Image (cartoon, rainbow, N blue to C red):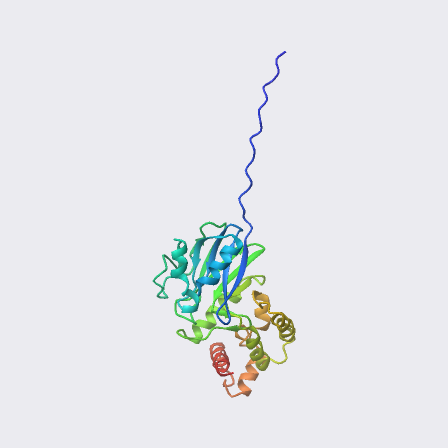
Length: 277
């Protein structure tokens, strides 16, 4: 009787890593730079300063594989040249915002497969702060992320340096339509000052009072107040709530909006008030 030949099992390779995390990298006075990584490779969003990014990459043992930009302001792109000296990687950014370093120009409806990461991002045009501003959205169920630069902030929005109130209102409405659990990775720690304004224009908002208490505790221990999420922003951010009766009443009472003004007029009045608040 002959025995059947035996075969040695082929050892299986460990599965490729697909878990992703986002590192918060403070810079300048109040900027946040974001590093998306899987423990080995990393993409950086809006690197206004290269040095804290390089330090974070080294500290976490990460290899830079891509740069993602939302708009052309120096505190968002100032570190790009230095990072490209460190690693020759693709630079994704807005098609119409005048950034020379961009190698992969993007606009509304396009998708990015981020090199080195199991990460797909969709692109939204969100003009207002600048004319060519874009945002990146991760749509993976259970991990909805938004990298929105200076369009949407915690309890606020960006100033209108180039765009119109109608453009910014439409951009914010586009972001507000994202799933409620979408994490909002904005680029600045402006939340407490924005909340002070929000309280002034909508003092009866209970959710807003709760957010003030929570975010004040966070900042009291030097923790970031962001990312927030879309649900929190819709409940407390006056720029997503410009047509709420309480806010409209405040605008009219302050002489900043004529009774019966439309939604864009209310948004414009709110933004102008915040500029001098």
